[in-house]
Length: 137
Image (spheres, rainbow, N blue to C red):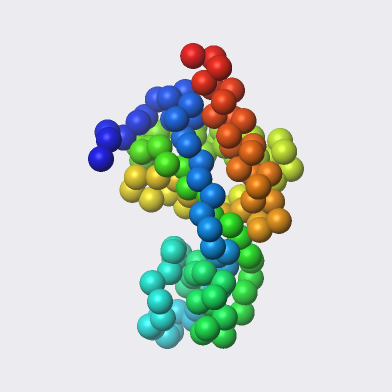
């Protein structure tokens, strides 16, 4: 694995966004029940319940109510967890294009979940952001 990158310009110029193939959905699972279903892409525990991010098929198989349908874009650059400004930079680029996103940070990469109907436009906006930094170097 390559070393984590902390420099903002380098992060942006090498972020290499990739659109993943499946549709993912947000669902809520009660905190007073154990989840024994498939391994989610992501979870987040809030006082209202456990947010599960699963494939749409997994949610349908378990008859879960779907709150939000999304496509998953991974930034394949190995970003340092203490890096400053990457989230702000891509969030601004998406906001300027009128696109929403929900962000998860893993130990190695940042991941965006964008509305299904905005996935291609979001990918394009991210690639344009990356290209703008490559042109300045």
